[in-house]
Amino acid sequence: MMNRAEEFVFHVCRETFLSLWSYANPIGKDGKELCDILVVCEPDIVIFSVKEIKLTESGDIETDWKRWNRQAIGKCANQVYGAERWLKTATYVIKSDGSAGSKLWADHERRIYRAVVALGSKDKVPMVYGDLGKGFVHVLDEISFGIILQELDTVSDFINYLSAKERFYMADKETPFLAGEENLLALYLHSGKKLPGNYDIVHIEGELWDSFTKKPEYLRKKEEDKISYLWDQVIEDIAKDVLKGNLEFSRSPDDGEAILRTMAREDRFSRRILGKSFAEFMLLSSQNKVRSRMLRSPSGIIYVLLALPHTIDRKYRRAELGVRCFIARGLNSDCKTIIGIATGQRKPGVGHSFDLYYLYLPKWKEKHQKRMEEIQKESGFFAKPVSTEFHEDEYPQK
Image (cartoon, rainbow, N blue to C red):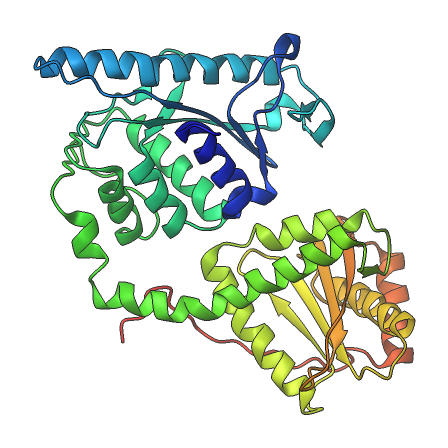
């Protein structure tokens, strides 16, 4: 039977958006556990230490608080610092079973975030946070961390918040913090996903989170975000097919992970835009009004969508997808990465399959341009692309 800390680790690594990026109980020095959770999302690494310490209520509140912070947070922080030291020389993650995980990029290219999740405080203890000796440590309890995971439910949104919070606290400002972490999160979201930088003192207290989540624009955002989960569903469908080996690739099966990770890096607002565009494309393609479309995400990634009748052989569908991705790269000189997603036209009672194409071409040379123009002329693909622009507010005013 798992204890609460083990259950927490299992939940984060298997049942949240971090599952694609997380390793539970990876191995470090001398075959010992490195940390409880390691999140690896190039160039970002988040090191988690999780511990449950029951709060002693002896009647001496100050002593009880100090003891709990020392046992729950101090020991976890030391584990995180130790994991960070070991990772400096590591070239890949070692999974809990001893097998190799993700390769790690050069140490100077990494952005490290340190996090402690302390359980058992009963929401009664003012937690110590900040630079605990060897770098900033995020300290959270199960309540605040649960709210953050629910509200910032993509890896990009989550890491951007950690980064903003570190800059905020390390800017030598006075930050009296008399409320739960969720109130800091409310300030961050209310301020346009950043924390105030033009004040000497920022006083955070009260019911900021509750009042923020009752604002009409917040409620409208949640309503508008519903379509974004279509993008999540596409990622999930593709991931299942990758695991089952059912997916067809125009290049190498190794591209499957790169495609999934690229799609999963899109933040929630980008997914709203992509979800709307994908839904509209699938509707129009089922009515034979459109065959293919290029989508530019706010992240800068270009997605090429292709939907053909089920009667067309998939090898031809894959070939067309690859050609269209190459042309799309030429038509978007500022974009290095193109993701192609092909499927059959949606029909009632008919299943669907995906073909994927991953094109990463950092330098677009003259020979590429010449070949692209030849193919474009021969095939007619994206010969006269129509560009449509629209405006989307993350927090609609009405």
